[in-house]
Length: 224
Image (tube, rainbow, N blue to C red):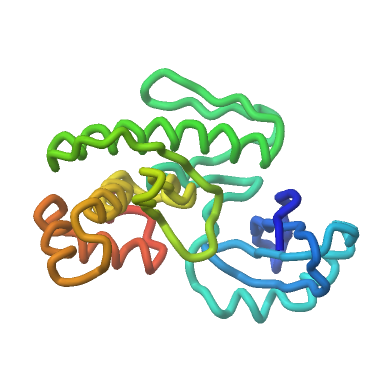
């Protein structure tokens, strides 16, 4: 099945806002609901009305939420950026960053797209930094993807492409560094053998601790 388009919506469950990712696919007959990476994911045929999807989601939302205790990463009220919770103002839709830059956004979709651009710049800089440290002489094609179902990153030997899940931008910098090192280590060892993790731990000695934070949905290392 081919993805035709992806849309985002918000849903309020018992006073809390959750992000809803709606994936429209060709040749899909049924509608499926999941709660993954702290948001709802709906896979649906193209012809189904969005309001009907949200109404249907309400029937399953509470049960799906119980499957995860991770915090909501982004909603109309706030967003986690590099492990810090940033409050959003409905009237003044501007986020100022410590480097002097800012994001002016119109809605949630626009905010996600613009944050993704900053995330791409960040991971590109990290890849270039660590590939020099790890003595890797490859010109990578670097991509980011919004809220992948399972993977935080991937590496294709054939196309020399490194892909990173945008969800990482919600976590602190140490988590992102660990995933970058993980994917670069696949240049040397493509599987997840002991030899592979020896390389990972060489350049990221606290990898196991950082990876546990990521899996548990802990935004930062506790210092913030």
